[in-house]
Length: 206
Length: 206
Image 1 (cartoon, rainbow over the protein chains, first blue to last red):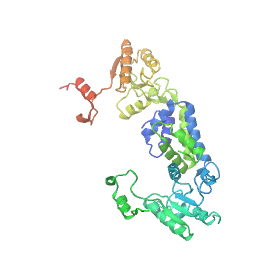
Image 2: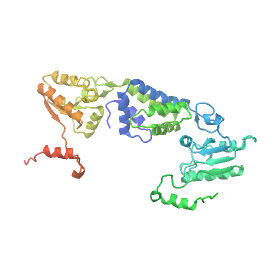
Image 3: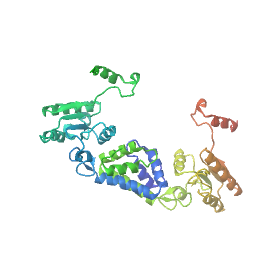
């Protein structure tokens, strides 16, 4: 595309670096900004710059935070004896939205992926082990829930973590896998369906 | 969504103001920026701010430009006797990409839309009339091509312009409408198909 203006071209180039945004969408966004009031563009530029430069990561769980400790780690309402291990900040948001988990988190910042050259040392595994080891005896960590993606990399990471954590004498669990709620059997892929039969759950008649 | 950080929340809010970008996509983009080097975010912020604050519009055709006159208006290779009238800057880019037009442009910056309260005075019609009137006698404007959308508003604008320009004794044409190249008859909407029969073109056997 030949742009009549270097300024537009630069903006389009930068915007199209974002994931999932091609040149055409970037141009549409740039022209949208041009039509809007100047203050809107300034607010956008300031918000992303501030986010990028001022953001901090919780020193305990590595979640994003405005302070040294995130609101979940510093909150007293959450059960400190259960830690949910996730890959990404987005997973924390997703789980928080369910309102089903009252413990604390640990954000690995990735999963073990030999293909991408990401080993156990590249992600925040040691700090998790430390959290278990250094927990005060009056408030020990009882359970680690692994909430990782059901992918090869997620499974590898879960296996590695389970092995490391077993040595520390802590209970390790993983979120259940199977057919999603509302999912119809005939549209479920074979692997999920096959596994969900293998890992079937007995009804408990109390 | 509850964000663990006000900075992220602000960034997501600002990004999701862009057209076609919801909160979830905005969060994905924000987290992408967090993973990238700080310089990338700065480059993006600078590019959009510079574009918005420094961009100029060509004083002749109202296309975006880095200078007083855009490269098309100041270029000597283009035929100054034909002006293609378009709604938007994007239309200029689209037509330029076809490499089929060697004349100059006039960007209206909108179309007449009584519903949205946009009348002939809200868009750049007078400057177009002036261009026709004030063209030097040794280089008159011979033809105005109306390349407007095939919508109610586009048609209204085209009709208004044709009427105004007729008084000035200039030839006015409009881009042809019909079945797109590669388009199959059975998938063409009724209006397009009906009109393309009405406005059929005779084969010329030379």
